[in-house]
Length: 297
Image (cartoon, rainbow, N blue to C red; front, side, top):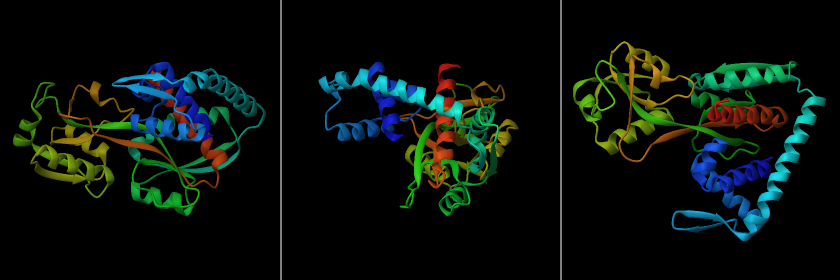
């Protein structure tokens, strides 16, 4: 399964001409694309890309691999469709999710349920640390969580799925697209996301790096509750731009990009590994759902 994913990423990079293009196509970070390509080159014992400055082209080995990789992917997809047509997945799967990732996961599960009507899903919404512990213990088969340093546990599998950029979000009455972010910190109360979480710790690090000194008002562990308070103009916040919530189109909100290099958190699926025949299907459908979203499908 990993080799097929790597080959799919390779084809996307080869056809798109860059790791950035592959990142958009397969819904991975550029770092994850690069990591997969290095692993594929190590497996093939060949350099697949030649880089000159910012230009990236296929090496002779890459040119040889490309049509064969596309053929293998097509055969794999055909085999997968045939197997799914003949053998329905059944039973109960226990999944967990952060509440902020529920929009994407619910869309994925709706498609899975239509494909596998005998599959029963128990879905639990919990905070990050509890989700990780429950996956490791086996109480959950898999969970959608924020990337962090995972413990060395046999069978534990992490697959990054998508990124959410850190942004500043304020009420539209106090901010517009050209409002200096520093002026918000100087003049308005700040609602902080729980710094005990990986995301909250990253926000705190960004605040220190940019030398923003917030007028602390509240600290909450719910991004959705914070967004609601911002809508009521209680204060402004720094938060990841959640997928499927469309805050940028909300007339009550103004979303401002941070200066300098973008900072993002990576979300993905953490699997226990003991029921990978089912959790892998959920994971692949989630990645397919992300690709459809990117293509507008």
